[in-house]
Image (tube, protein in one colour):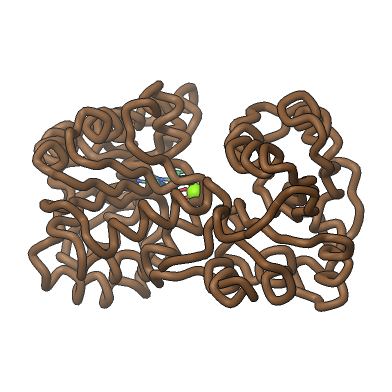
Length: 373
Ligand code: ADP
Ligand code: MG
């Protein structure tokens, strides 16, 4: 999984560097709600500027449909960047041009015009074969930025030489979204702990009745096959919401009850139960490597947040090497104030899962094909 590093770029003084960053920040009323992604690019920017390079950054923001759309303008990012890293130029939202997602060669040529070198520090976009990710390394000497290099190092280590026992904790909504990574993890982990919405398809595969819980009937056979391995731990109790209840709306009523894993009709399993949370905590506590992706329940609703909170705490307390795979689990860790106690929180949900699954990403492959690699 090696890719060219910043030190492999050669002389930087007076050179022009195109930096693909991930400035896809959350916006609220046109203001930046959290500038973490901009600050995360600073080590790379400062390295480049410190060596005398002129940096032109580019990023996408949101999902504009291949044409300019003022609500996705990078103007707020440009203003913040000017404060944090004076002297960096920032192009307009890459996805204002349909050539970005289409990986149009003409768009690639426009991006690299006047540039001498290319740096990719946009891990969260590197699983996409988009123009700004895979195009420039065909023409310019290229390297991974600091952030991308760290992600590759950490996630590569999980795949190739994890300290054991290696425990993966998976949750979130769908089995189908994460089947690839489940299969890949099965061959490297010692234990795979499953909670969240995806546990119900596994429970159904064991013949349990799941009531009105999230279920993907077309995945039952696959889950049954996966359960032939004794590495998988499933919940043995649940927190469930009874008929008439509404997720996110306690005022709507509906009884919340601790239950076993056979739910009556009309009941929805929305969190792992306290017994399961305690068992999972023990498993995590003994791990020397932990990878966690996906909340254990509908943690956005405080009635169903306890399982995710307990697991987040267990990961934070674990003395092994701990990694959270971006997305909603990273949001949960931040919300619970535990981010500082995790060794590595990936900046890319989809990208971290794909890298674990495939061992490679289009953006990394492109860097390895660069003229200086
Ligand atoms: P991540 O972003 O961490 O990869 P996902 O996007 O796969 O995770 O899933 C996160 C969503 O899964 C959350 O919005 C959460 O509410 C939902 N979820 C978790 N447990 C359940 C459940 N038991 N039933 C329905 N949805 C669930
Ligand atoms: Mg998600």
